[in-house]
Length: 80
Image 1 (tube, rainbow, N blue to C red):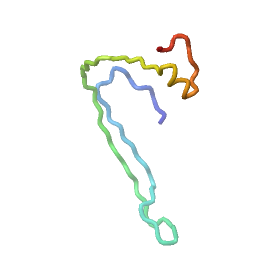
Image 2 (cartoon, rainbow, N blue to C red):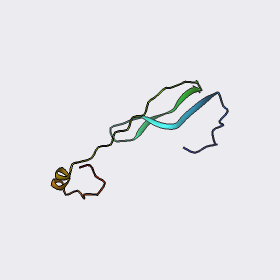
Image 3 (cartoon, rainbow, N blue to C red):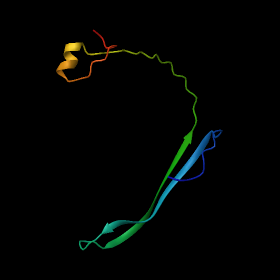
Image 4 (tube, rainbow, N blue to C red):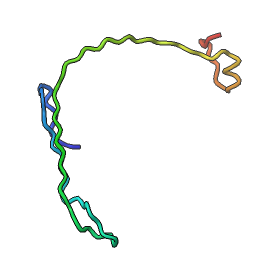
């Protein structure tokens, strides 16, 4: 979707999405017998939230024999 840049100071917004002349009825020959306009309206607002998270890192390496079985290159810094 294209449009103006979002104002970073906004607190709330209304988004109106519309489609015009959409076929909603089609006869057996494939001809449109009825069209309609469809519309959706969405309201959005900012809400402050605090989240506490913890980052964990795990380093895993194949041992030399497992790496050789998979034809993986063996680096000098790999786990024994």
